[in-house]
Length: 126
Image (cartoon, rainbow, N blue to C red; front, top):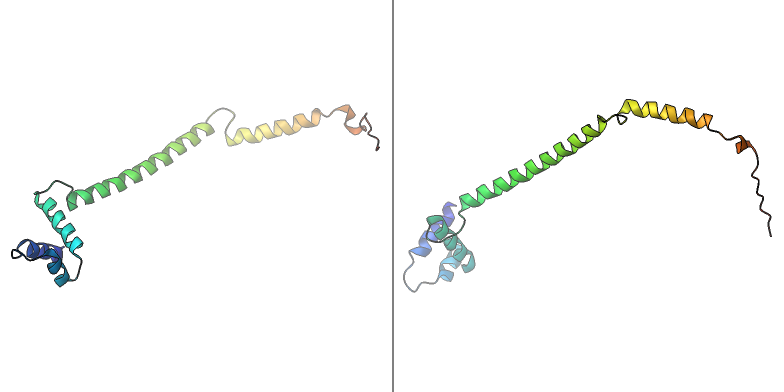
């Protein structure tokens, strides 16, 4: 940043008639880069409206923090939904085992007497 500030100071204090492109070329970068640096320096000094480097940095950090908090909220929301489903009657792991046992025993008792017989319809090959 110090180099940038020095270059901007040289450009601002240039002699009348000296072009920015010449100053930029002397320092080894383009005139558009120097123009952008001068514009940003005007914003930093309050001579021009816009976001300062500090404000941009703060905004970037706040957006990053906001994104992290949104992710944490999503994790907590999903965990709460999962835990609320697990605490409902008939939904927990113990009730699954009981339900499985009940279903398997009821299937045994529900066998039909015709299950061992052959089907009553026979299909003949044509």
